[in-house]
Image (cartoon, rainbow, N blue to C red):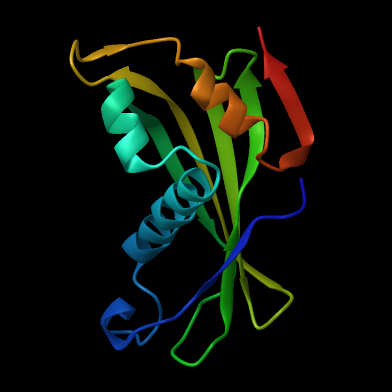
Length: 145
């Protein structure tokens, strides 16, 4: 698939006392991007509710490279970095870019699928795999065994 990129608007409320982006905003942007991808590729919150599944994160890490300030033009993408072949476990990486070409942060999340009725990890239904195969893959993508 082609890149999946979302434009982000930096809001005044996103800034900290140092007048740059609060650290927690990067994590919010990552969640926004992942959910936007799932929604666009037929795995909406309504579908997940019907299937009684939802994504769950085990780890979320952000490496901050360059500060973001009010007025910067910001985009975020997503790429699958690792996955089990049934997509029951996965690692997604986001790159936050400011002003067209400056890498501001790299956000990496490890996740899986939760059966929302049983509250247990599950192998997801086919709808999940059908969505995840459409996700861009990182140049260092690897299958998990």
